[in-house]
Image 1 (cartoon, rainbow, N blue to C red):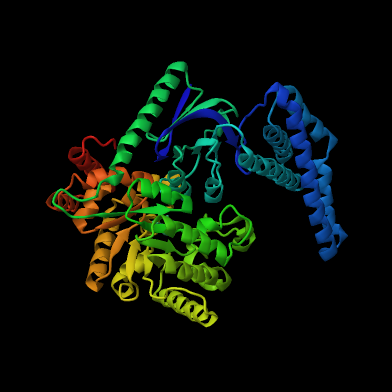
Image 2: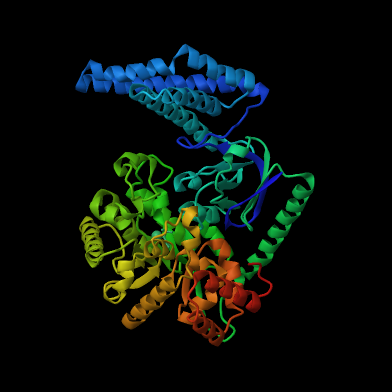
Length: 582
Ligand code: PEP
Ligand code: MG
């Protein structure tokens, strides 16, 4: 048995057999297959080689046509290498006789040859070694892509262990069979983590290297409450965790009963708790827990996990489905926030491989550049608004020009619908996310341009503190309690109040119960959160009074280390709400 720690991102306990997804370009785990699966593994390998040779053959043809046969010959040499009888024999022996997985056998053989060649110390040979590494990568990509596709064809429960899962892959996990997951990379506010919460799958991320230690099929436990992964648990641990799984379910049932209670402080102040969703189906979770509406609908998930660009009708259908669940509550539709790590398969080439994608062409910048993406969405939002209280919100606004431009386009789309005689509602509130420092610095100016603010602390922390939200190596620096972030929250609220517009928090900070007294003490009255955290948050709110919250704010101002502030806040919430497990 082996216990590993990571970052807890979605609560609950899951126990089951592991499916291990390797990662081309990284180490390949030392994995074995069962004796009766050897033939299948050999055939996987042979198929991969055939596919790779077809792929290289296409490049050979293209380059020969464009540059001449002598350049095409480089690719012909790669094909010869991929089919080299000695290499093939060695790889097939490792699979057939030692039961290595195809990935491990390929990786081991190619690397050992490449290293031998490299050690010859000759420049010509060093280049041949890099050919071998390239080829290894191609074959692994082929093998691993197929394995990732297999995730869509599960027939029994599994726990997914991977180097990384993209938001698109996570969104498409089949929750009938995937019980939970653990990844080597990722941070608390990464989109993959957020999605785990949305899908209500126990999950741990940022584990560091561990895949090498696991074999597919072995039993593992994911403890999403404490950020623990247990490999090969002994009988006693299994028994304890089965108990803990039951306990977690019964606490969830008890907390769910809070759904019908109002989030009102002991001295009578109503705090509005909205839900964050990525899929229309999540409105069920929000309704069960008594959400005050939808404060953030991340519509880019309509694009992830599908090869087709969603049409206006697909948008319209999704929005009207959400409105059906909340016919008389606000529903904030955030326009596309594609880019960075949220890249649809069909747009991979368009985005390319840029060094700093979080600072690149993403979000509202992309929407403003690609009207064919943006206009159908705006049309669908305005049309769906006929059926309820829809509000539109622009993500990642960083300049006033962008904000004006987006509003102009919205105006254009209204005129277009008017001319076409299509029913729509034009007077919907228009808001923006405050998640870039420039928007926070000019919050008083922006407050004159929009009807509401929603603060995206996930990105705001990343950009303000220059800390990648998904990188475990700097996770200790990523904190909503950092004094710089708290100062920004105060400034933005003041700017909103000055202009008479509402400001809410929709980043993960709002979902963490330790921050609730602080936010209330600062003057925030609206949050939008991961649905599963609503009951806990209601419990905290119902234990607070405004003077206690204001005192907490005063004390926090005397501290200057994020970790100290977090510890102090945790201690306060434990004191105020002792029955809560935090
Ligand atoms: C945020 O950045 O806080 C936010 C809510 O948006 P996302 O997590 O989708 O980037
Ligand atoms: Mg964001």
